[in-house]
Length: 575
Image (cartoon, rainbow, N blue to C red):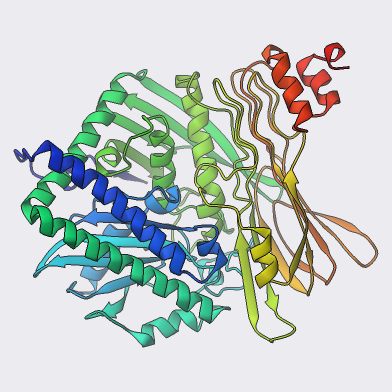
């Protein structure tokens, strides 16, 4: 049995109306909705307590209309933004089933992945926006909380077999009633985290961001009137829809298949996609994808939806908006009880993080056959998630740390891949070493690019990262990564990037322990954890790379002289 999930129906386009708002007003509304979402994000980030939000910007903000359609969003995290519309619809359906009525002054909190659409760490806050007594829109944000309980510090384990092991689960719940915080509800979440003060600070930042968005949105409506706002919002969606259809008309028609793999112990899980272009949209079918597993690599439908819309969005013009006008042109067929549409209570924390990346890579693999001159080689394709935690010896308090680590972007037509960057579904920032060392019992020994890891090609793949740290206290470390076994593919004759590798060097005895791509290990004081991330694949025949670029690569230590001779055939001129 398959679940067909698309936005081509009447609930997306609505009843056909003859709307002719002023073109200038439409443009004002279009830009205002994006700007308001960005402003919400600035507020959230600057007010947050955790380095994960404050430094890495692991949060997203959006504005949705009264029909749960995305009408404005910030350029934040694709897996968040793409799942918010489905999360809102699921939330409203849940509340309706509970006979709950939405009222002015409410704000809802939810992290149930099978409703909100990502994983338990991502706490979603939804604010209904009323003008007088009429619901006109929703402001919403989603932020990754470093810890929401569960068996492992950071709430992301590599061996969870069911959802309950990953942390506290919150169905849609009122956090604000008549604009007052429900402290008893707040305490449910706070009591289930390892760092309650940080959780409280981040939640208050989320509340403030939604309230700011509401205030700014009502100010906009007060200036142009509710009718102009509704009609202009509809026109923005229709404009995006028409632009999307115009782009599809330029693309080859037919179906192409792609696939990529997730690493689970000694098994490879398959993500298979069939991408079909037509004049009025694109369909993505996941038939042939592996069944769901008793491991945290299952991606709920919201994640799959977000990954698909992101991948298709990247072949559109740069200025293209990721709103409902675009989303309604995409249809997704995701078989139930697979790793791209699991059934509850399958664990899902890594599905949001790693499976989302592999969905994109699988779609790119298919698109590279349809649009070979537009699709890059595979990137490092992992968030290289690192979770650390323990009990501080000085204070006796529990602590948890989370970050993602970049790698190499794939080479692309006309340009080398970017070195040491977060790719595709991540879109977060680097966590500064100084911040980590200030707040946590960790000392960094190295943070640098990995020479020779970018795949050779006419356009070289980006290099991976070496991030090496030393534990100052006893702690638990969990790695949830990829690409230890399956290297990032090259494209159009380019060669694959080098794989990732994770290891621990014991201070007692000097033993080096190689870790799997999903692994947990106890670190003693002085132990060294080494994280080496993959490089991106190369694009085009390496033998056609310009000599001047090879020389620059050697000078910048992106490649060695030996690699230049071996991969690019430029041995003699380089001596």
